Amino acid sequence: MPKMKTKSGAAKRFKVRASGSIKRGQAFKRHILTKKTTKVKRRLRGITGVHECDVNSVRAMLPYA
Image 1 (cartoon, rainbow, N blue to C red):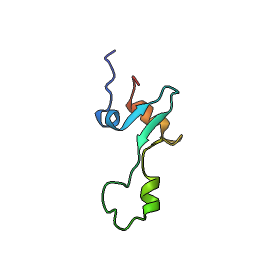
Image 2 (cartoon, one colour):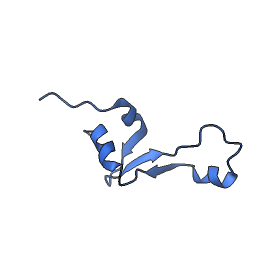
Image 3 (cartoon, one colour):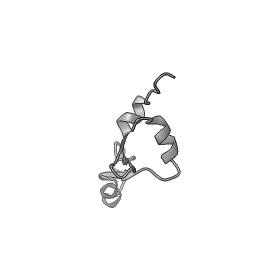
């Protein structure tokens, strides 16, 4: 059986924590920021976890993580 390949785009976007949960960056913070309020932009800082309904598909893209 050949080795499974990791999706390179997923490897750049997701990291697996020691607890097994998957972390990801926040979306909607790159451009068109003038119409967004300061409160919204502040909430988009940092990282967050992948939603539980998407965890299985992300794990399929990262077979060795």
